[in-house]
Figure (cartoon, rainbow, N blue to C red):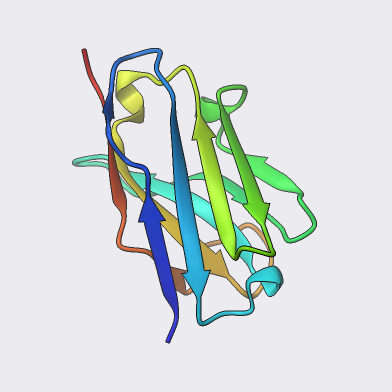
Length: 119
């Protein structure tokens, strides 16, 4: 059974930082492109960042220079370091695993973690 469990979401003030974690089980982690997506109220889900097993990364333009995705294949965990947070970063953040390769959405999703940026 595949499980992706996110943690680290919280409420933070503008300009603050958060680190999200996603722990995976039930998949061969190193075979998967891991991604973070987000969905704000009334908006479509969008890719935030993704990373291959080898460390190649892909970022949404809106987060480039502020967010960093990383992974630890030994711990089956992917991280999203978010700095200089803005109110428009407020959303539910989802972890995704894509065993097919490429930057598209994979079949496996976590339950989501809420990030709220507000003063």
